[in-house]
Image (spheres, rainbow, N blue to C red):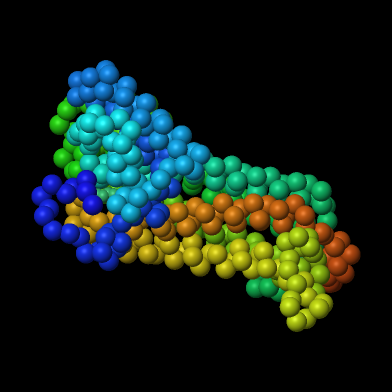
Length: 387
Ligand code: ARG
């Protein structure tokens, strides 16, 4: 089996070691980003004379064909494909021959993978921002429909003061608003192009990194090549953002589970977001919201795992960093499911105004009564005692 890095090797790689080292099973999801990055890189090295016009044209045409194969699901992976970068380069060689061997000039998989992940993340995070906005929209619509409906507000889960149902629901809108702001902010740091950092010491061919970054849709370039190949802050920030968002959704799920219990009866989850029991015929369980609450565990776990992975590794790229992709992908995939489920549950939520009204017990107005007495001239402490 011929390897990209096989030049200095004479022996074989242990079979288990090969499987242990390979990342193709998950980084194949970076395929489109990898091809995009390579097309832009081919143009960049052509501009400084590493490739002739015709070599660059061949490489770009070959890569475009590979992009098509990925899109149509026709790309044939081989057991010798260690990762997505090797797979694409191997296929390019099959398609265009010798010219393919010039694409990697001045580039390392270290700056390549960092670029791929960032490109992938920009698409994913923008899509998640839209999903987040759609969830907020579902909240606003529901709040508007029941704008003036009153319910008990709780502290310590004890009835506290009457509040509008819409006020309670909109409290989650604002949590998600901060999540969206955090996302917008962290996207600025994702949008930096590491390509040209090489293995760690930069690019020997004087490519125009600014132009390359612009062509790929980045807002700018990374400033330090040694930092660029090992920086995974954008992943840590994303996982941390997702863990906080997961916490908010988990609290919303908990409220919905509680308020839709038979004991409260304020709300009812639409049938399509509940499931029955295999033994108890009467059951209608809020599994959708329990799963949303439960998924918080993996969102937090992915963050914890990644923080430990990057802790204490020596400077620049170390293979430990390959461990960044699975938690990232898992967190993004989880949110792609969770957000539309939450939006759907909110949209289809049935509201029981009667149950809310009968839960408005007298004691809920105690604070208002004290306030009334204050307005009639009593000091608050005395009014509190009297009530
Ligand atoms: N699969 C590797 C990763 O995801 C790509 C970079 C490999 N770099 C290297 N020096 N072996 O991190």
